[in-house]
Length: 305
Image (cartoon, rainbow, N blue to C red; front, side, top):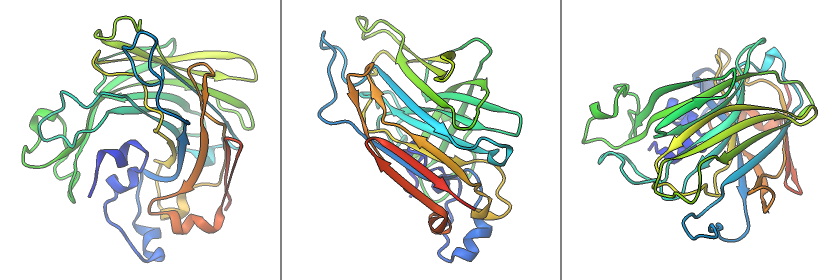
């Protein structure tokens, strides 16, 4: 069974690769990208906050601090992402949609030896504004929530088979070319841009990428969501994924060293605890090479080869 929650928290391998293989030797040659393999879970204590005027529930800003130990061409096709979900965002979906609160992600990708990007995407976003030097795209990423998710491919939500449940949907995404250096602290920030005193109007959310060693901050872009949506949920985690070619199956996933700090919410009003784990079709193959250490909100993930 394929569901939208699986896609949103980064378990993309379950969607793009629905074939489950028990034998590890066979799995090495049958898995294909995109293949998620590390999941991050973040927990904030207590109930979600409510705005002082009582019109919004959830968080209006998240700061994700991280460091990558290696950013070489060997990591081409690697995606480090933080998921987001909005409170009260499940309305106005197609009748055959699996439903649930909607969201997206903000993260960084190494696309090749010479190209890296910061990316900000939301399903069902209404509009997009790129930051300086960035660009935004609009597309449909939807699939059938059954054992034939891509048969046929969904190119428009109006053309889906009404007898089959559908997950995902149209999305807008902003992408910013960036430079990633090893052992350099970075921050991805997600923040509400619109005026919270107008809760019924469509609201803009913006994302930035900051080099904390130099202080340089760059806008990735802004995405607009329906005014009926409330603020961000605290339960969304993150993932590391390999979306590049996988000619050697799970052995195609490169060695990585990543450190993720506790997430700060609402400009420091709340701080998460963090945990990390292996998952997906490459879990067994990566287990002998993976070391995960989480302490005081910081998770260090090392995959050796």
